[in-house]
Length: 123
Image (cartoon, rainbow, N blue to C red; front, side):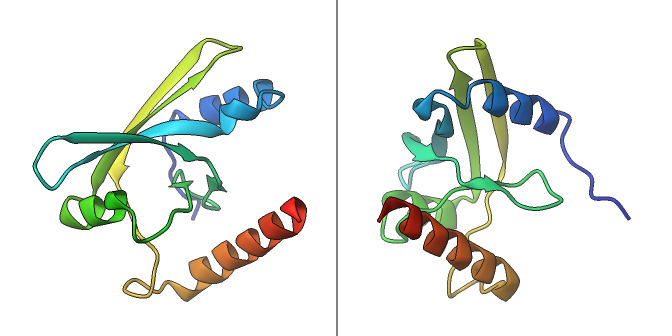
């Protein structure tokens, strides 16, 4: 059975490709709900899409405020603007946190391999 994905996914992939020559095109804003109930927004780096889904992946330090906020309220919205093509994407949904408390071993193994490859590229 084929996975169901959002209608925006192919449009986003097209925007990523047409703006790939701009380094800042891999950055987008992630808004969460703070522990005080107020909005909290920050810039994060796109790390890919989970295979056969429309789940957007980022990597972050588990000690950051966003992790605490997402554990409190697991819903968030991203806003991603592509400067060359003048396209903006706003996507919201429930966030999955992968760590020792939610050990999807297959996903963690893929993420660790991606991190290893990223480190090899930067060294």
